[in-house]
Each structure stands twice: as structure tokens, then as C-alpha cells.
Length: 344
Image 1: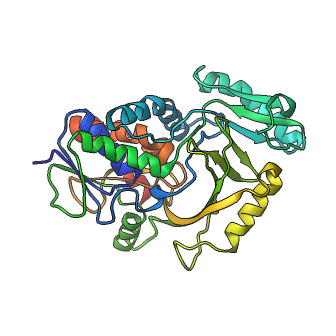
Image 2: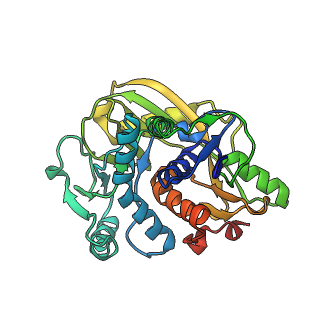
Image 3: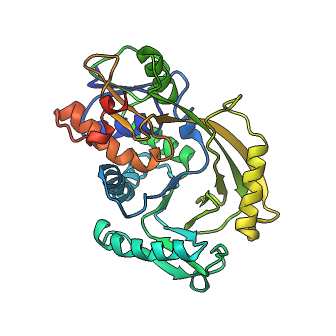
């Protein structure tokens, strides 16, 4: 008999399963579509922090999770023997104007306190950052050492391998046993919205591309509102769009062509790089934009973990910890902003 049933094998479901199994629980993971079948099977994998100012519980939670990530993924890889593609290599962001430059300097000061000396946010001249650094109109970039890269598909595969080593399989169907958590992404938010008669959350489409371009062990970039993620396997992911309105959830179109054009303008050294994959998927976004955690609004004595949207992989280690605390030990450490009732 399982102590915990996880419905949904995206990044939230798999991470919660892993953390519960690490604590000795008997776990079953149920997903009719398999592991990483939704937006968790994407390309980009930008684990990047919110700006270090106007601090709140959401930003503090994300910071803790990003700090936890290195040990979390090291252990997953150690047990399962499969690389997740994780690497805390930082991020560069071109600074476009003097106002943004002044703001970046102020944030460098607030980061010293808010980031507790565990990571840095600094302003650097482009001339000091090497050939990978993108052009900047001011001649300066923001360099943070907290951001990390992640290959979403590899991360899901690494979790599946580690869970299998511990005797946990992802199965297509099964009965609820023990504590139950629903980590069902967009489908779960739509189910809630229909039952409540109002929008609780929805899906936001994203389009991204994968290029054959080996940038090496360098920081990710954020330029012209695009993420550039150099993966460990010699590819480069670029994305993504954010589409609230769309006809087809899993097809790419001219919006991705525009992303690629902007990417080359922002980083000219990509000119001529081969596009080896175009990807589209729909990410779960709650009305509050924060993850939805805690008691499930529809299923008494069951739980929910949903709403990863753009920050799911970065939040996953900490979310897995607080959900395991709640289900296995009855200890509720969920921030008020994340509580399921706040999203209704």
C-alpha cells in the first residue's frame, strides 16, 4: 500500500514523489500521459530569480529553492545515474539605458542583504565578460550568480531514473492510496475553474526553439525579453512567447520566427546556427500567478500542487519539501500567498 499517491508526472509531481521517497515513504506516481508529457517536457529551463527588491514571501521562497537546487539535483543524479543538465552558471542581462543602469546598481546593494551572501548581483562592463556576452547599449550588463540552467526533459528523465532506483514507477492508472496530491497542471486548473464557475487559472502557451550551438560552460542570457540557455549537451534553447490566446496548443508559427529573429539581433554570433527543434506547449498559470499549494478545493483531505508557469523548475525543490512536510509530518510551512484558498 502506498503512503503517498501523486497524480501528475510533471516537474512538481516528480519532485514531490522524489522528496517523499527520500524520506522513506512508499510512493506511487500516476499519469496517463507519462512523465514530462506536458510543459515540463519543454526546452528552455531558465532557473532565474526575481529581482532583489520589494522582498516578499514569494521571492524568499524562490530564493531558498534556487539555493537548494544544487544539492537537490546532485542527489537525484547520484541515485539515478542520469544527468539533469543542471548547472549554476549565473546569468547576464544587457542594460539598455541610464535609468536601468542606476536601478541595477541599487539592486546590487539590496542583493547583498536579501541574498544573504549566498549569491551576487553585480554590474559589470561588457568588455570584462568575454565573447559570449551580448551587446549592450550602455556598455554594461547585470551578472548574477544565482541563476542556473536546466534541461527540462533531462531533469524529468533524471527524476524518473532516481525514482525507479527506489522502486517507484510512473504508471498510467491506479487507485488513490494514502495521502493524495494532484499536480496535474493545466488540466487541473481548468477542472477547478469549471467547478468554481470562475477563472482560477488557465494555460499560457509558450513557443521555443533549440539550436545546434555549443556555447560551453557559460552563463545563460536574458536579452530583449528572451532567455538563452546553453545546455550541457551542446545545444542552445531560446524562448519563449507568452500567449493567452491561441488556436493550437502544440504547434509553432510566425511568433517563433519572430523570437528567432530577435534572438539573432540580440546575439549576432548565433547567425547561421541550425534550428534543430521548434517546440510549443501550454504552461499552468494561476490567477494569482503564484503556485497553488495545500488542501485541494474539490477533494476533501487531498492536496494540490499546481501553477508552476515560468518558475516551476526553479520552485520545485522547495515546493517538494513543503508538500512532503505537510503530507508526511503534518507540518504546514506553505506561504500564505501560495495557499490554494488564495487563488480561488
